[in-house]
Length: 216
Image (cartoon, rainbow, N blue to C red; front, side, top):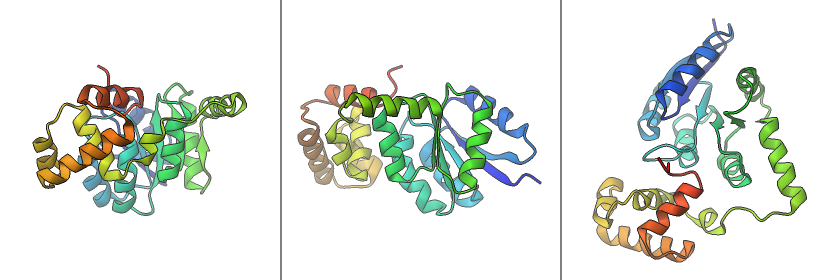
């Protein structure tokens, strides 16, 4: 029987099919579930209790970064490996700070995925050489980190941020997140102050730049 049970969370069905095929070819690995929607996936993960969740970053509704705490709450013992094309330090910092165990670039060699799964199950952190190389270059170059404002947002503010970036009104945000209209307005004011913006269009540009919203 496979010893490592993986769950795939990526909004692109064709990529999930490819990853599933790749993982299932190994005797010690098996995909036990998958989804393209992070909020929907949390319930499945709580029920299935997989060993590892492979998690994309840019997804509709809730980004992979913001899904990490929810997954951790649903399955405290699960390992989380980010599987994404975003390789910047801002993404890696946020993912690891929130509890990710590994970070794999989608541009990596196929064999690296199995290596990452086995590594995190041994209790070792895993970062793709491709991603690690970019971090070394960043440190040597003395580049500044990602926008300080995003790091300053609370998890709730990040949820509001993404909905506003999608063009939702204050009323729609309040309804989607189960809060009062006044609370939604207050979150919007805080977001605009922290991110130094004044419109939904500016929020959308930040979301696209940071990989929390697709530009497609």
